[in-house]
Image (cartoon, rainbow, N blue to C red; front, side):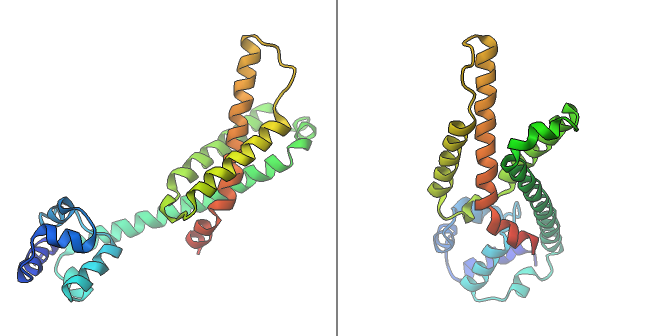
Length: 206
């Protein structure tokens, strides 16, 4: 018997409606309907809750439904791949943070490294930051206002310490100021993510 049929059977044995089950699991009725029609599967966490709700073992829920088992295997493989990408991007983000801290000596280094190389490094750092932010589990950051406040404070400090002065007010000057401001915002985000996403990095690395 497939998982969808088992969900219908267990619910009817309890004489519950889909809405009753949804309220007990704190999810929408549409989600229950999707499970019972075989359009989707619950995640592992929800599967445990279903097991507790109907007082059946996980083995009973999973047994015989090979499609569902394969779905969980694919999901597990995908999660592992995402974790590896997250860890790699976090390391690249640390490199970016180190470059930021050492940026006072970058003019010295630029005499020995060609500008195209610095451009490539900057592109890699920005790309890894975007991926890191998109792959982060924001639901696990309990103090979300603290994250944004940290980002704001570091941004203001960056602007105060590094923002260009005496820039002429013309098209080139305005473009330069916009570019510098964008850089300050990205720098602040890079440093903020290095601190706030460390717990996720530590867990995914393990």
